[in-house]
Length: 505
Image 1: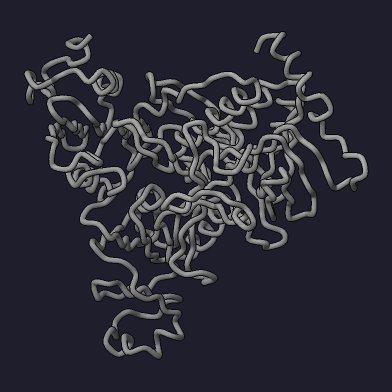
Image 2 (image 1 turned 120 degrees about the vertical axis):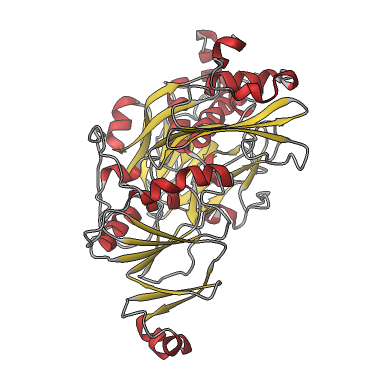
């Protein structure tokens, strides 16, 4: 930001930008220029960018959890692909790095958007000029308030899962998304019954072919990890049992905790396809049910899962990994937020909600603009970081009265992760989303080594799935972005004997 811009900004905001107590108000009322809600990746990224852009302004970051999530080891893999780690850190680390950033640990109780004011659970009142909501999402639980049904979303729930697992012989995992995929592969010493509603595992990310490529990894012994996790980790225990949601776990959350049950078996996973939970019974209720007389060989278990395919499994506990819902609840009463079909806060291409001076980013929001033909919103870590960063840029542009265009990261969907110890890269319409029947697929598969799938429409590459060390991500990203007509290449496009990288360079 130029010096002239800063002076212009200071003139505009005279009397606004400090945390001082307002005249005639109690000490519990504070006034900040910018307030960000949420200590996850979206919120922290947004707050960091605002602190950098406005070093003379005080920024407040409100978080329900005692720790915040920060991006580390960031690496720009290609134009749109980015790889990074997520660390949990105490607020003091963030405040030391950004002296003008104040982290306040308290959940939001109520928002009065028209008055530009919000109140926290601990009774504090904050007045703001610009607000960015990054409160994330909460897990969809199969059943509420059942001690034998767990959702895994934040640090506390991961620790609760670890406690259950350390005494368990068998668990039932319900769901087919990222958390479920990680769990069933990482857990050892405990039999896993995996119930999914789809015909193949990982339906959110893969097609049936990719699922078949990965299935042998569930049956084989896991390879030894080459290096121990060197990431700094902090653990906390809830003191008040308030049930406040912390920010979501990092993409490699399982590396920092022991995921081992009581059995000697290394890895035992049984998949039940095309089914969901029909009923959940406690041991006492199951003994009284008709199922007990029909299923006499199930044994005694703390909880029983009755599936829609008619099968019943006894287990020590059930993991509900059936997705998340945007955490909008604290902000809706008394306000006029426009919500999307998935109940997320609908945002414009400048990350603005329908309430004045209120922005949103990450899992709590839903993109309300007409998306690029190659992009779709998925509630993933990469998009949380991108949205938080872009929301801060939009706030800066608004304050300085500067124009801003939709960021390039929204031009092409791209995500890099790891499942079943394989590197996984997803690009564009990787599962032919929205293309109907007007597409063709090219597939190359080497068992135990790599799986490559390309989605073509009208001879142009629209998406790709790369599993394993393919080194094709940058080349395919370029081919998708430039929409080159590939009709003449046919199946040669995936010929392993052709160095496609050099060919298109």
